[in-house]
Length: 532
Image 1 (cartoon, rainbow, N blue to C red):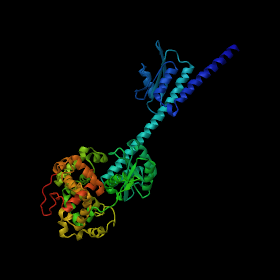
Image 2: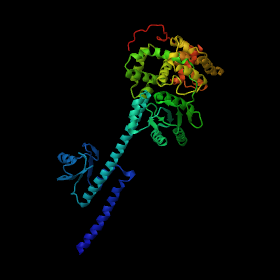
Image 3: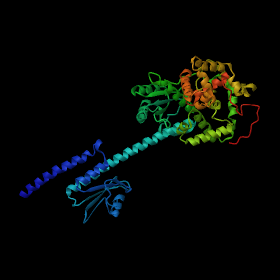
Image 4: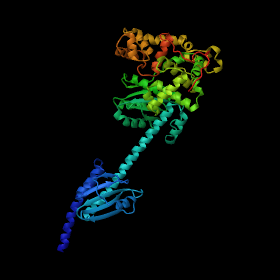
């Protein structure tokens, strides 16, 4: 009886000790305590020994490196045995398999101590191995979830890149696998949400929530603080505005409705609207549809001129031609670096493609007047391919567009004069000249003669230093004058893009600048051999 009483007393003492280590072990499962390295260190300290953990590949995950029987370790890793024990003059070692039963290989937990393993230390080791399995599974699940989110994000970016190069068929095909019906539309709007780069992932998740699967949400590859949304339908705009209201410091810019083939143009509109949103109290703006210069030109003559200017590219294989044209459009709208990030290629690739187009067209893209006229041709070509005939995606926006657009729908009505039209003829129309004089006339009220500075800056290819030498002023003065002209003209000038090219065309239409000498601008000139 005495022995039984003594045994009972020992049992109570052991229960107290067991409850202590068990509670400590459970603490490692709390959200704030899930640290595999700390758990392995705790195990070694609790059993008065040393513990280490190796993964399925044999890499040390936690604990110090120990001399182990590699044969036993290999047998446990591949599942031939579940555990093993060994002893020598230096102490005792236990090895346990840690991982899922199914995989061909699992991790190995090793514990060494100078004394033999008693029941208590064996229980601690067994239960710790079970907790390690839970933590490893949780870490694998988290890693798999992270990989899935990354893959989904990369897929969204790939779809956007296809839309940017006007490959709507491939974009729809890719999107249909994960987001059926997302791109089953003819038109869409592009929004750009700007916020803190550190908060972008959270903002992107909020965008996914408020649009309820009706938008392609992409983390902009070029601007760390931007989230790009290709939105289907008319309801997401208000939801995105409410998101801006809930997140101080964010801005929202939106495009007009455009066809999917004009996603790149819509993106440019959204970025332009973002600049307006900076000065608005609600921090949101939608691109204001305005009269664009190409809409004031004779549509049949504009089509004929565009076809003639871009004809050297017609000799290329279809996919090569489409690739060069799409890259050049983006390269003219943005910097080579930004265009490269949006397209998912290197900036050298963007430059090489644009240089090839330069060679085919025998032009020089360092000349802003050349860039503006080639941009005009490329935009017209997209409108024609999209069935818009230069209407810029909007029907009946301006009174003068309806009559000209109707006449432009019948290619057979273009007379010989329209077919032989040169750039100078396109710029000589009274409607275009009136528009240009009104636009540039806004600058006349400024005593600093912004109009003169802007003219010389454009003539210098947008280079402030060269313009400053011509004007005999400091380069910073040129930049300040150009920056001051932006709110007056309601167009971005320091950033390359359609806003700047419209102002360049206005200078050409008023005669402030001479039209560029384009090799194919003269319809009577025979074609020179082109080497592309």
